[in-house]
View 1: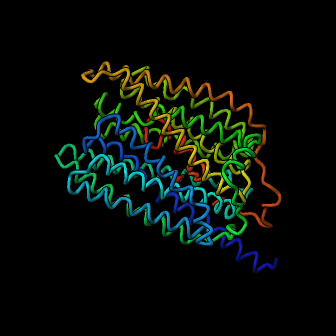
View 2: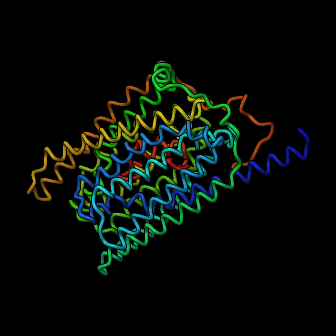
View 3: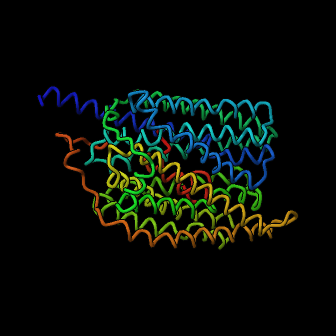
Amino acid sequence: MSSAARTRRISQTRADLRASIADNATWAAHLGFGEYYLPAFMLLVGGGQVAAGLVATLPQLVGAVLQLAAPLGVRWFSSLKRWVVVCAALQAASFAPLFLAAMFQRMPVAALFVVAAFYWGTGMSAGPAWSTWMSALVPAQIRPRFFAIRTRFGNVTLLLGLLAAGSLLQAGDIYGWPYAAFAAIFWVACGLRVVSVYFLARQSDSGRQSDLRVVSPLPLLRRLRGGHAGALILYLLSISLAAWTAAPYFTPYMLDVLHFNYAEYVVLIAAMHSARILALPLLGSLAQKWGADRLLWIGGVAITPMAGIWVLSQNFWALLVFQILSGMAWAVFELAALLMTFETIRATERTQVLTLFNFLNALATSAGSLIGAAILTGLTQTDAGDATAGAAYQSLFIVSSILRALCLGLLFRIARSPFHPDPEQLPDFALRPADTSMYESIALRSTGMKQDSAGQTEENP
């Protein structure tokens, strides 16, 4: 390669990495204004506590079915990039009916579920293709540090979005215009998602779509069953079910049982994300030194008690400490799981494998949320007071931690494979590292914090 070509290649890769960080930053900010507050909006329109929990899970199942067509969509568009950009733009459009509903101060519960399903379907359809695309754009030897840095930027903007949206909602609650406050945050969420689409469009196309393999689901599952990728996927699916048994119900627990206001609610969310921001720079170096698999063990053990500890106190300040611990634990787990997917899943099959994973993960999260709903319904009578309802929620949190502990046995099936770049993927130059998204594709939805605000945290295309 000539010196001029090498310089152009380095310049283009750096530009791609900067655009990827900007995309993630605006995408994460849109979560803070939009997705995090869907359960709260469900409570406002009269959906009830169980519906507020299920709106974060059941629409994902519909979305997961829609995204099964992602490999065909990539082939039809003949480009990973074009498919991702179109899906992301459609996801931005899903905020329009939410904005209108808030303006007109009404929305049928069923309609909110449909909009949420469209939101998840478009986002999930982009995720697997995005992961394959990024594996071609991000040099293998800088992935641990790059994704740690990228996630840190995303967490900062997510935190700012959460605080800004929470402040608007708190003001709306105080001054008697809650619907107008929701209309404002949904409008901003749409705009931020549009900006993230712009930065997606500025990144280079990888050309990897010509190498994609299309394998029918059953043979793919049979082949994955005995390998490291299958063991990793099984563990992540198990964590999904365990975490989402409790994850969707932290929001109604805080708002309807503990009667926290929006300001207290958003501070608890912000504490978790602040802890993640502080932890991630160190985690990138630890992943490079220890290996992603060892980091996954540490994260798996650390997240186990993070739901159960909520039974120890109902005091706001104690819960704030729990959130900080949760943020640190989930930061370890998320980064490790992201890196393990790059190591264990073949690049040529990653889009299809992760598409299948998204579908199975949606089944796991939906099953977990339904188990949680059954536990709450069984333990809470129709006329139950806050004390009885609180005890039911706390029992649910303990169940979630027990299930997470049982999942640890599956980690023994994941063979030690410390992170090291594949020599065939190494470019002939080095770069200075400029939410992680594939695992934010898995982690943010499999672990749950994205909606539960209690320490359980892409689909960031």
